[in-house]
Length: 507
Image 1 (cartoon, one colour):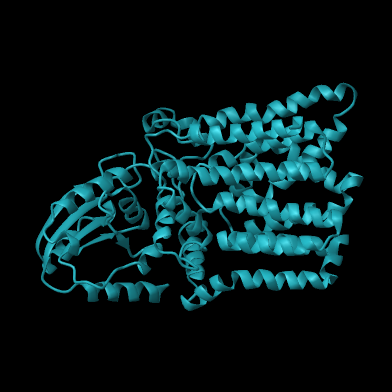
Image 2 (tube, one colour):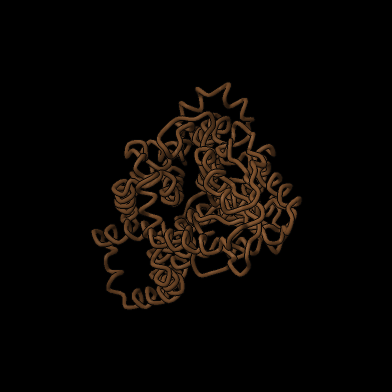
């Protein structure tokens, strides 16, 4: 085993160790994670919220026992593989040992540590971007057209994970056209590769067509409710923060792509970054959508710095550059991870506010970062619903209807009785079981909508009561109420069907 291999294994081991140490056990999963895990029970070629790749991973996690370890294992694997691909890119660019260590350090102590704590499509999205950039680098270096086919397959897999990868293509095409690498478009095999890619993603596109393109509605809703609060300058500030310890390396990469002669064949990467960022900013995208851009630039920058700092007194700058990502990561470690109690965060709110971490998607500051508040109260909700369900007459004929997908997913994940809660939000709108008549209803309502629930629903049942609520004051779902209705006077299935049709019509 070579020295380089031992060092690489060391970085991978540290990566896995950190991913599990950065999470405090007092936090639950985040609301999106419950939805993604529940997709394993409803395998399909598409979903309202995401393409199908995540559901396939969820199914593997389900087969492995659905434990927290495996839920956190897969994003950690994707993060470790991203480091590995950057390492291989540095080797392809003839980087020395210092360049390899610098690149791996920059990748290790970056926003990926936070991203890889969450079971969401984002971790594999960043890996997909990095692999595609690496494949393009290999093609430019070798001119072997097999890389076109490999790249097409990887793009298709990335597309089936998260549609965000289309922005990578939007940035690359004009960048290639304005540089000497435009000759790639004269290659007939490129278009064969494109057809292969289209063939792989076709089942998902067909699913979108058959379901009236829910992705269009999803993007519209994002634009109306979340992206409207995105500030373009704030987007740029976040890009700096994401890789704050690597900013000198990334700047060096941009300089080297313009002026370092060995990198002349790769100059299109410089323009690709500009075009891609401009596209994200034009659409007012969320800041983390762009994270996948940067790993390949860390590879270029590390190789360039490894070359210019390899002689004389400049060698003494090498340990400084390696230490910088770690030193700048320390303050982020103290605020950017759910490793502190809610009480600690509230007592020290100023430093969280300084990083903009208390600002939620509604554009307002709150007590906790949104992701942290989204990781509280779920077990409490599930256990209370489970307890209510256990005491119901004819409990097998009970509908558990929630206001949002987080509530439904958490109940389905934590319950001991294999409950199947549903909601009119996200993918749950397609998962109602209307094959039987329901005698009872457990209604989970968000606090802002809870007051009128008894008045609106009681007339359709013989008995009704407020059974409990989420009492964790730090949870985003704090105050969410659990209502119980028994002895249905009518068949409520028709009302449910009407509501589903109304929602889908609106979509």
